[in-house]
Amino acid sequence: MKKNIEPNFHIGAGGKSGLLNDPKFRSLAYQFIALTLVVILGYFLVSNTADNLKRQAIATGFGFLQKEASFEIGEAVIPYSPADPYFKALFVGALNTVKVAFVGIVLTTILGTFVGIARISKNWLVSRIAGAYIEIFQDIPILLQLFFWYSLFCEILPSPRDAIEIGSDVFISNRGLVMAVPEWNPVYQYVFMALLVGLAAAWFFRRMAKNYQKKTGRILPAFTVSSVIIVGIPLIVWLFVGAPLKMSAPELSGFNFRGGLAVSPEFSALLLGLVLYTAAFVAEIVRAGIQAISHGQTEAAMSLGLKPGQVLRLVILPQALRVIIPPLTSQMLNLTKNSSLAVAIGFPDFVSVASTTINQTGQAIEGILLIMAVYLFFSLTTSVFMNWYNRKMAFVER
Image 1 (cartoon, rainbow, N blue to C red):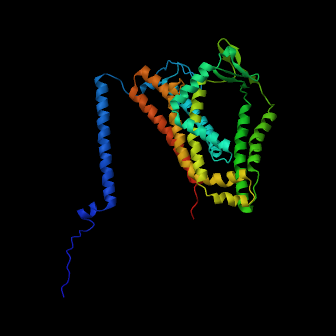
Image 2: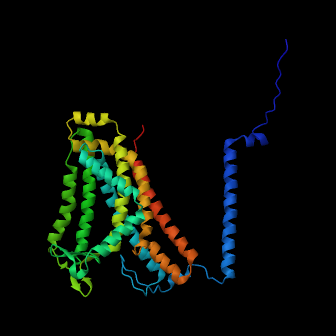
Image 3: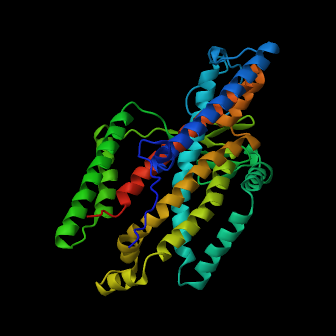
């Protein structure tokens, strides 16, 4: 009987064929080749740019940041004057971007959630109005919306002398919204510290209420009690220090108002455009997240005697958040990056201030690098926070 003898061409793991057939080795090799090509390309671009700049006698580096800026900035979160250096001007622009992005994200999340819930409402009129809002604001480019709101504020609203008066200390004109605010008093720092204490106490109470609900099944009025704590503690401290409340009221002086809190038409148009545009996308994300939850969850909650508002707040939304958070993060990043369009309507955000700096100093490469670095920092910070919150809301596997 003949025996089938098969040739054995197997080469040991240490041989050449073994390495080429090893997926881990091939993966590392391909990554090394790709990294080498990127380094070579980067070296070529940097060296070529440096040679061209040297040939044209263009100075490089970030030394210009210490020089005097010599230009005004219409809005600033911190004190600023043209005598300040460029780095402070850029910092003011970055703070303006943070202000727009932070307020915009908060308002967008609130508005988008309400519109998303209204989109699936059983009320025909409410559902159609929410649907019309989503279709209109999603389909119009954000830049056109900014132009529309800016022209509305600047051309349709009256001048400060004929400003629309709401109450006694609120005025709306083509110079923006002006309202009375309390003047700063040194004792307000104690009120602010009391507010922080109230926020911490409310957070601990909500955790206690959640643990109590898990153990007993009973629901404590966490929202009501937390609101009382947050408002009550600062109010008690304010009354204890003498309840100072001197108001800074706006007064017409020349061609504009003096005093009070002023919100410029540029900031208003930018914020309104970003919020209305992005909230339309957030509404669809919220709608999809709610509809992703099985209807059996609603029926089970209703069978326990929960009211429709409690079903949505305690059962549906906590589960829907696991679907909502990842795409919501992308919309937050889009809002932050879209804020760079502020340069089109004259709001002094970071891109606008950096563009002025580039025009004055000629340091185009450094200016563009700063813009890229700042927006990269904003995006990574937002992503880190939202990824942390996403992990916190994820199901715990056992």
